[in-house]
Amino acid sequence: IAGITQAPTSQILAAGRRMTLRCTQDMRHNAMYWYRQDLGLGLRLIHYSNTAGTTGKGEVPDGYSVSRANTDDFPLTLASAVPSQTSVYFCASSDSADRSLGEQFFGPGTRLTVL
Amino acid sequence: GQNIDQPTEMTATEGAIVQINCTYQTSGFNGLFWYQQHAGEAPTFLSYNVLDGLEEKGRFSSFLSRSKGYSYLLLKELQMKDSASYLCALMDSNYQLIWGAGTKLIIKP
Image 1 (spheres, rainbow over the protein chains, first blue to last red):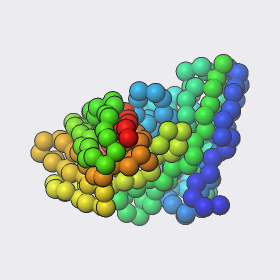
Image 2 (image 1 turned 90 degrees about the vertical axis):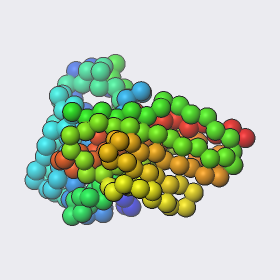
Image 3 (image 1 turned 45 degrees about the vertical axis):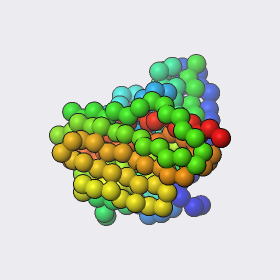
Image 4 (image 1 turned 45 degrees about the horizontal axis):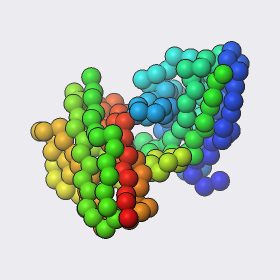
């Protein structure tokens, strides 16, 4: 693995179903993030984790949950999907040892459609 | 709260120069970032400004004026591959990135 991977690449999901989006990084970055990107809107932060074992809520956390059991993995779970969660989801990571750099590295994204 | 504004779309000619502006309002500031995002792909980091002035990196330069809440990204010698969206983002007092909606840049031959 080089960088950040996300799975699946795309998914069509029935409303009410549970879904977990996977994210794995091999850069040993402490900080990880989940964003959603919708047409005409900027990236919006869903949840973040500054280090393994800790998580925090972003701008739009409702309907989503995350866990950070180790440094590499940061899965995002939709407990009961709704059509408004149709979006492109990006996972990102950064080296929080130097926050002032702020450079975030992004995964390729997951395109999720909830019907 | 925070607010970021940038034009929705711009058009420029191959070989020319284009300036993409970004204005912002924020109560806490730890830097201004520019990212490039090609259609269907992930954003990639372009530049970072935390002090006033111009940062040059090859064909791309980024400028910041903190007192005016203003930044721009300058792209020189435009190439067709520069057709992409350019995202302005500010780092707030919690070291989180707040993103603008992006400027779609269309390059014409």
